[in-house]
Length: 337
Image (cartoon, rainbow, N blue to C red; front, side):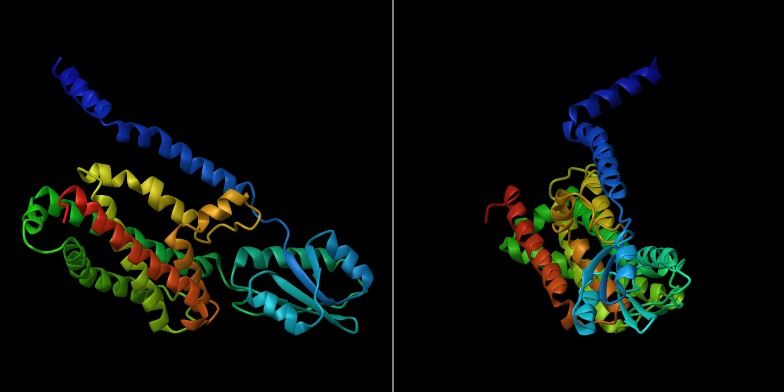
């Protein structure tokens, strides 16, 4: 009977927490639906520009890939840099020259399989294959490492910041600070800078281990990657403290993970979204990790500078500022001024 009394107490307690009940049943279904929508729309045909090629070759290629006509190699190269195509082909007599973007091994494999099907024509010489970025030996981990590094920084900073700020509230420390003449924005900024010191150290350690311990490819500047990671961590820090304002305990804070954190890894570039539903593409644009992952891959795998990823970097800064502003507004529930 005592066992059942404990069980009844827990059931009654959980039944009274409607948000926990809703997330317990809705969150797994939501995540599985997102995975299903992404994986069932995976890319099966590459996008290839053709500059010059025999008509018979183009006709065969069109049955295997999405083929577009490019009027010059400069145009095709621009499209390749913009990631609107996966490769381009130009013929020098009977010898095809193929340039592959190369930063994503799964897309590279897709292009190579397409070329292998075309090579059954004995009259065609073996193509010359070049890579704009990476190489044919680049593995899946090499391609995903920048995304995973950014995600783990984002995830662990979110957890540490959220739990730490929540404990400040539960212990009454925040209430005592709110009783002082400090303005709400000063309190938020103070917590942000205080947590930020340790978050920066954590970010540096994780990046050093990823680059030098795991030998993750680093084509661009180490310092450019560090700037991106620190800005990404700042946004996660601000988001963690913001959401902790709406949680009464650690369990409620963790409930945000399936809704706020898990989708970010799915939409950050690990899965190719170009054939996914329109709503999935739109949804991917609202997550900070989308911009962080893209910036990290552009610098680490494609060698771009901070200027080259300025749009993604500005978006990350904007998210961090937005979360800080919302955090200041959220403190109104504890003090009006």
